[in-house]
Image 1 (cartoon, rainbow, N blue to C red):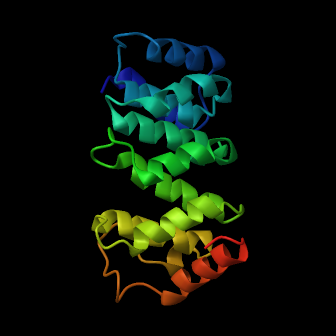
Image 2: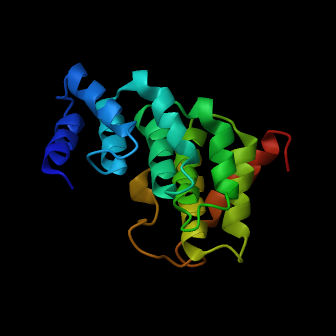
Length: 193
């Protein structure tokens, strides 16, 4: 990674980039062949809180050639910038899976985003899809784990009260059935089953 942009990323994380530097990063990101890795450039914009470039970041949601850029764009728009309400359709689409997300980076990010959003918002479609993923034995273990963790967050569990996402856990022994029951009760309360 270009050292200049790595330093800019660290400064963006601390809120130390000037408007001129942010504009320069945005211009670089729009080039056909940018000087730095597009992931780094996009990450800098996200960390800098440059919401004036929301439209530019949105373009990466359809980054079929590089799904990790799409996942990062979703994270920026929803987690960093708190705009999930504008993107619930995209979150649901990614949760359900898009054909070009071969490594399922977008699905995993969408699960995380959905869980945090559901802590304060009622979105039956997102809740239903998380439950479906968790209960579907045909889904990959990592996706089922992500769905469970997101359901736990959705019902208000603190991070310290749920298994760590840093390692695989047993989807029978390491889960709290009350999480699933509470999520189902919440879904039923919306008039959706």
